[in-house]
Length: 121
Image (tube, rainbow, N blue to C red; front, top):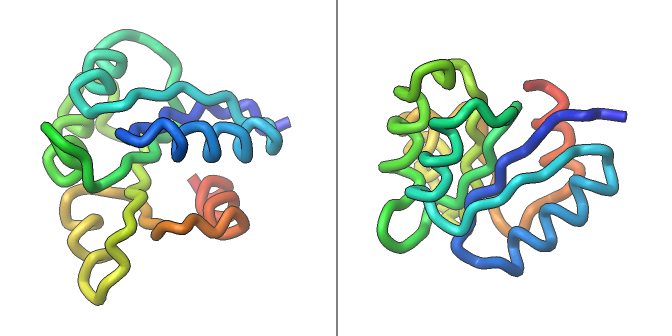
C-alpha cells in the first residue's frame, strides 16, 4: 500500500475522475480542486498532501502562476509538484520546471510514467 496523498488540480473534472481512479487503484489517496485558488486555500490548512499534480493550462490562474505560490506557502516549500500539460512541445518541460515544478508529464497521461515519477518523490 502506497498511502501517499495526491492533490489533483485540474479545471476538467473528467481528468480528475480518470486520474483519481487510476491512482486510487494503485493505493494513493486523492484530493482534488478544480482551480488553483481553491488548491492554495486547501494547502494553507494543515491537510496532508504528499504530492501535487497540477494542470498547467487553467482559466483564472494557470499552473505557471500557481506553482511558485504553492512553493511559498509556509510548510509547503518542499512539497513536490508535478506539472500535467497537453503542451508537449519542445521547451514546455523546461518552462514547467523553471516555474518550480519538480516533475513534468504530458497528456494523454502515460500511467506507467506517472507512477514511476510518483515513486521517485
